[in-house]
Image 1 (spheres, rainbow, N blue to C red):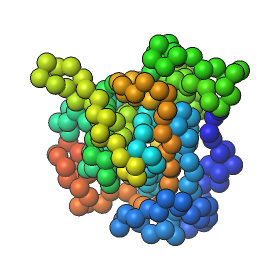
Image 2 (image 1 turned 30 degrees about the horizontal axis):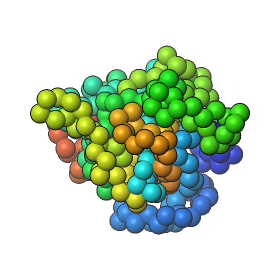
Image 3 (image 1 turned 180 degrees about the vertical axis):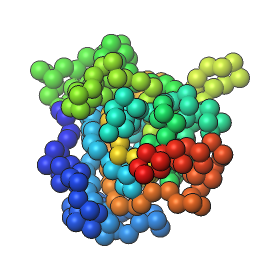
Image 4 (image 1 turned 180 degrees about the horizontal axis):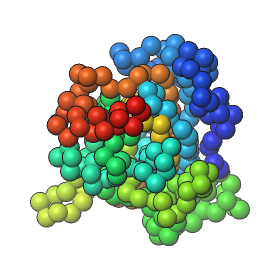
Length: 273
């Protein structure tokens, strides 16, 4: 099952002035950030565990992902909507900010050195950047097989297949898969360099706010993390909430995190001159 509300997104992504955009929904999970007012909410919907979603998030919009039951993993890809050959670049994102994971204050760089989105708020604290997504063979090996013909919406979906479905909606495809972010998942290395998935890291109600500094195509897949040791296929649901936030100002913590980010924001803003 594909979770995608075309009519809803069509309404909020039309080229209208912000003041013309309707308030389409109210939060089922209250958004408590001091940086936004409830009347600015544009839309909200739930992304069930195992499903996938995509949409256009315009410059100056923030998207909050909320882990509803503490079992979510959200694999995400980002593309410049105006030039889709420009997309999220994991190596540049990490080396520019001297980090191996993402959290509040970090940004997601494109392969052109521009800031696609910034993490303006984060109650989770660690988001995996290098573990990728499970393909269909990996899901079957790890969890067994549950096909649509017998299990309908209870079928086992792979993160890779979900992202490919969403990519196809925007004229992209399997060749456009690249390193993704896994929101809500923590993976660290032990003394021997072995990667460890932290089962205690995720908590119900945690959220991360992605503020979009460009017009960005976002692809999401709420499927299990490749290193999650859970024996059962039971990915958690996620709440999506979008609102008008504006972009990073001159004193924004994401801009000031490091000199590289300052230059990245300047490079981004020149795109819109």
